[in-house]
Length: 149
Ligand code: DQA
Image (cartoon, rainbow, N blue to C red; front, side):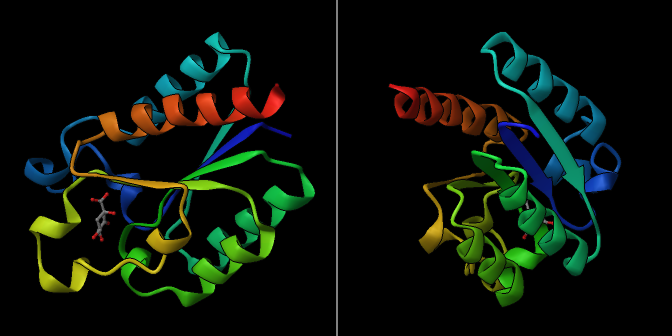
């Protein structure tokens, strides 16, 4: 069991080579190892998963509940704009989560401006590149530390 679960949606496995002008040139492995290290410095455990399949992401969310994950950071990628099923999974497990987007979804195509997740999220970070994950993790620390008190 990990305290924090980071979930990456479809095509984020290609981070580093996928549209670098939009998403940068850092790989997903490098993002995840940075987050794990940062979590460790604060005494938290962190697991990161990625899938291109909606049902696999839903299974990860459901598993988070049985494994007593305390906080989720999620970039649902294209499922942000399409997946009622993944949204419902997060509502079902009732684990607080932060939604992260590397690009600014509001500055792109019209169809990216709507997210099924934002209304249920603790907060949303969009457009700050991969730094958004680190910011989300800092906010997670604060939430978990406040919770401990
Ligand atoms: C994304 C934005 C989505 O619109 C897109 O489908 C992605 C990545 C982002 O991180 O900027 O795959 O979630």
